[in-house]
Length: 356
Image 1: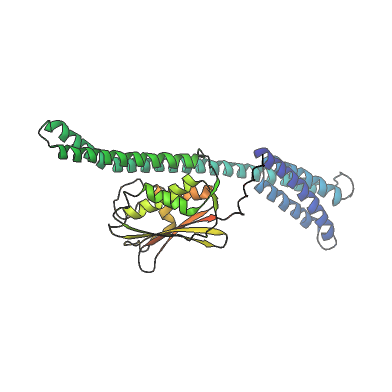
Image 2 (image 1 turned 30 degrees about the vertical axis):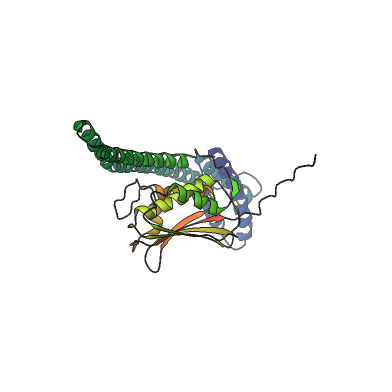
């Protein structure tokens, strides 16, 4: 990449000398030769600002040679009879070197500043991640510690029902911690390109049904309504990843709305997109920066657990599918989370088997 930019600079230096020479010949009848020299100087300055020191020096040498050969008497020869033109040539070379050196220092400074900003962003993300993990693991660990210590301390004095309740509490908290770790690992794999997308033709209602089945326990206290027409086209997606995206939206709705709240899942075709919508009719988020919801480690206004990666994972999955995801507020309150998948050409028909 660096070598390519260098050769582009050399090509632009040659082109600039040719263009300015042709323009100077058009200027000769109306402008003094000194003004033409200024045009050459401008070309040298532009090359020095945009490219490397080598391109700037090449531009200065070519412009000096072209100016001397074309405009300085005697024309058509590299002979200088007036000392003032030597000063002009020296100024061009000096300007090219000085500006190119200054620009290299500035580029190096910008690169160092960008590296420092990237390092600061990395440290901030790491600190946010550690703070988020410690916050979200503190409560389940406390519950598990309390329940396990009660089991140990009680001995045989605790009834079977009480033991079962404590064991279920420990299991629930451990499963929640495992889910959080799974989301962190999945986000890392998505960002690093460690996930292979297995595209295949499928129906969106099958994917939605699978996501609802996996979250049946979490959604048991909500009213879930599914509105998906039967005539929707097939989509070429990674069914497991899209199911994960839908599951994250459903989980987000379940965790941020009170029991009994309506959760509506819809799908429709709009142009060349298949739009899937998860509407949660809860308290909503007035004045919310909707795009910020899909950033990493973003939490809702309620402390519902999680590390704030569910919606960020949705966006990363949709980007792998060249789709989009967004959210907006419903007119009667609540939030609609939507994502669009591109509808490709009709899937190929299966090849009929040859008769025996």
